[in-house]
Length: 137
Image 1 (cartoon, one colour):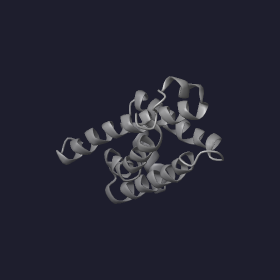
Image 2 (cartoon, rainbow, N blue to C red):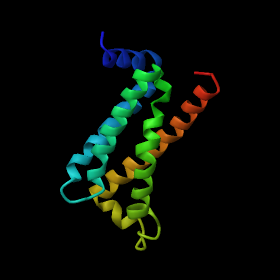
Image 3 (tube, rainbow, N blue to C red):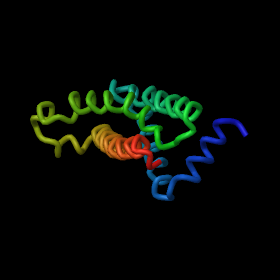
């Protein structure tokens, strides 16, 4: 068995079905960015961030064999991306006309879902990394 297969098996063995559904959701939301890359610059940042997270997770696995530290890659790529998305598209300063008119845009709906998804994931990542640092995982 190669390292990638071992990592996949560890993720499946140590994750609940709910976590597996969440991982699938994150993949769907990230891949959906392809729909918007031709017209929206921020959508072009999602696929490279996704690849960066994957590479960081693989490096983390090779060096630690601990799936609970995969959040480190999320911190590196998603915190800056979340800040950029918020400042450029979601902040009240940008949405002076309100959010409701923008909800007619499939791009704005997707971007909002993506933003909420990575922020929720980052909260779980902080918890997971803290548990490892405390010796509980």
